[in-house]
Each structure stands twice: as structure tokens, then as C-alpha cells.
Image 1 (cartoon, rainbow, N blue to C red):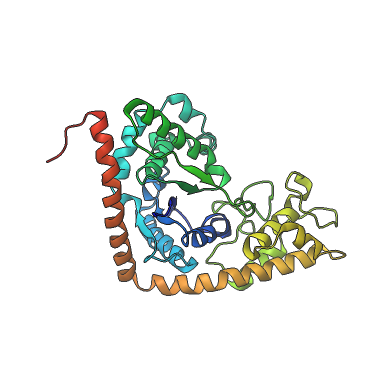
Image 2: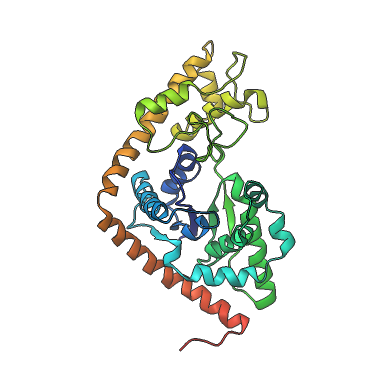
Length: 333
């Protein structure tokens, strides 16, 4: 019996951070055992905001190296660059033509990002249609996404249903997979906001490339509150900092938040910070070391990308040909 299909991707537009690892990569490693997985570096999405070409190229290699260092096996999964499978852009245009202006204008990520830009590219507005194409091309069953991408996945579901209603069965309607803990790691300095690689405060974000001492320093400086009670309270903004540290521990160790809280009975915030720092160091260190070794062999990274792109294009073309026929395009001979 065929395994259910998973598709997901990360932009190669900056250094990957602890939030990426705990919210996505760590779960991807676990999911590859039971699912048919396609993991993509979405470089077409990256250019919806200005990029330095040299940096984008290097970040693409770095992204693949992080995937592999985190434990994603290229023999078990399809790993590729979005731009190496042109079917993404083709289907993206077809879905854009079936997406309503109102749907796109309601996207919170578009509102947030466009508010920070003087000149807004059209690609930023139509980003969700391309993301829908990424997912629907592979008849995806399950999409592991963070909370911030859930709205985009809902649009992908709506577009799949709309196209199926208009043209007959073209796409599977994907389901969302959000891990209960660790899907949204918060800033260490402003714990009511999501951890971000673009945060101007260097102590707010832990990167997978950070050294042990740097990680320890950032965790020990993590913002908590003026109280002293160690509790897991996701709905209490005052306890956001403490809750974030517990969430980080839970996501790495697999322990339940209540169990972690119980282990700190009678202890202070300092104990929680020191322990969390040690847990994060032990988590990131082997990933960082393997990542650095992989980056030294670009030839092997190119070979992995080529194999992945060939496999992705073959699958994507099957879906794309079906959609083109349904829309009335003349088949290419």
C-alpha cells in the first residue's frame, strides 16, 4: 500500500534558526519513516522580497546541508530546489488565475510584510497561489506547517476544491499537520512574538550555526517576568517567556510540559534557563558539525539536488498535464 504523501519547504533566504528546526525539520525527520516525503527549498518564494543573488545561491546550498545534517535522508525523501521544477511556476500561474483578489488581500503575512515595504512586488501578493501549486502538484496528503502558514494552507485547500468542482477531480485536498508543542518558538527577548531570523536584537534568535557559548549566552539572557513561578501557560502573556523555554525543552526532549514544570518545583528561573541552554546546545551541536562538513562538498550537494529535481519533475508533470488538459490547453507533442 502506498504511503501518504507529504510536501513541505523552507525559504533559503537566511540562516536557519532553532524555530525552523523545532517547528519543521525535527518533525520532518520523524515523518520520513511513515510517509512519502518531498522536502523543497522554495527559492522562487524567496525572491518575493529583494535578495542578493550571490547570497541566495549560497543560502540554497546551506539550506540543503541543514536538511541533511538534521537527519533527512536523500535516499528516502525527494530533496530539491523549487526553481529546478518549472511545473511549480506553471501551475502557480493557473491557480493564480483561479484565486480571488479578496482571498489574497486577507492573508496576514501579506499584510505584515507589505507594511514594511515601500514598493510592494506583485509576487508578494500572489505568494499563496504559488504555495498552493507547490503542495497540489504532488497530490499531497499532509503538510507540516507552522501556525503562521496555516492560513496559506487553507487557501490551498480551497483552491483544490474549487478546481475539482470546476474541472473534475484534479487534486487531493491536503490536510494540515501542526505538532502540538514546538510549532511556534518565540523570541527570547520579546516572547509574545515569534522567533525571527530578521530580528534586529542578536539575543532574540538562536541560529543553527551558533556556537555553544553563544547559545548559552542567549538562553541565559532570555526574558522571563518579574515573578518566580515556573508554569506552562500558553494563554498568559505575562508568562510567555517561561512558557517559551518550557516549549523549547518539550520540543527537543519529547517530554510533556507538565512533566517539565513538575521537575522545577522549588527552583528559580535561573535553573530553567541554564537547563534549557544545555539542552539546546546538545541538540544543535551535532547538526552544526555535520552541516559544516556537508558544505565542504558542493559536488555531492549538486548531485543530491539533481536526483531530487528529476524525481520531483516526473511527479509534477503527471499532475500538470492533467490540469492543462482540463483547462483546455493543446497538448505539447
